[in-house]
Image (cartoon, rainbow, N blue to C red; front, side):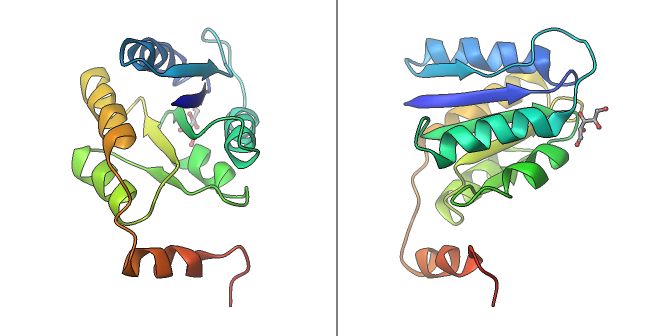
Length: 145
Ligand code: RB5
């Protein structure tokens, strides 16, 4: 799978580690930055990753900031993007099985590196259950009722 990955300064270190982990798993990691610890604005990287997913340039996305929250808020502005803030493996599995999440948002100040790697594995290996969950995902939008 081709995965677009982005982070702000708070998430850059974890983002680098997750890119290496993706490659170890045999995936293609499209690293859209940031690099290093200089202060940047998280929406710039959320829009880059979400835009790549929305355009079909990547099948999935992973975004890392301090909490994951700001990244998800910005990424979810893109049509067809379902970005989920996940804190553990249960969250991550259900975001895939029930919500068909295509962008995983992780907080580097919240989640340890080992757990973030396992969340990445679950995010990539867990399928969407469809059925009643497809109806509910369809109702998310793009246009609210
Ligand atoms: C940066 O300090 C922090 O606000 C950012 O990484 C993120 O947590 C925002 O949601």
